[in-house]
Image (cartoon, rainbow, N blue to C red; front, top):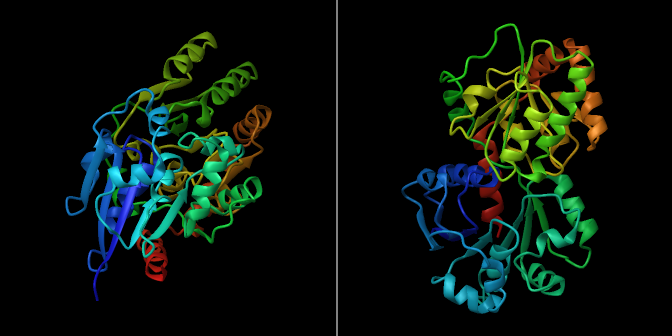
Length: 372
């Protein structure tokens, strides 16, 4: 039987969760069943080196540049498809919202199945419009797709609620994590000494608004005034546009002993595995890669209530899920620091009940591709 030709179109391979799980998927997809091509709009990023060598990989532009979305709107989706996509495929996948979706939805080949991936909760439809001329064009583009894939159940429900004019068959596929590799890398030593008698907490992710790290800083400031930060450390691992602002707020709140900024680390698992608690303060998520990895490494999670968390944490069995506001973050952390035995109970629940396997997730993807 001939292999299915699959094109995956993504924005770039920067250091984000979607990019990491995309590389994981490419690593494990069957080479006997699929002939896969990855194309990115921009060619730079730390995950470029992680693309498997037997996957065809190319990009349109080497580096990102200002005004890209404005420039793209000067051209029709059909013209962009003709300029960017030079072959025919059985399946074309827009692995990210905005520009990739506009391009893939404009595929002129009737026999090609067009799939759009949604990685986030859509609270405001305008969040999806950056790559489109207007909301009407966006809705028309999504309705030209044959299927939509969501990374979590709530992400799908939120999309359907906010955008009822889009009526496309939908499917939920959780992100693929390379569990065996994560566990192997987690055994490497850390470069920063962690206190043996300290409650160690970490955040891992891009330092951008959506991740809500300033909310953790504010909560820690209040907890310090409550005298609850004795022998507590928060390690922030990641880089992003909010990094300097976060550093300054840590100084302003006199938290330099309690919150340590570690920057980007290509192997955050060596830190996560040695933590007592993993913290996620996001305003929104699709299906948090870092949170899934923490559970796979046996680390309890404290998180705001956003898409995917009830699925990852088994409805609160593997960690604490609090309402998505500043006060709840503070009150939730206060509860855990006051009753630290709860963290141990979450850890025990993970040891006895969490069961993530990479192959089971990949099998779900292949079943979906085979059905198209």
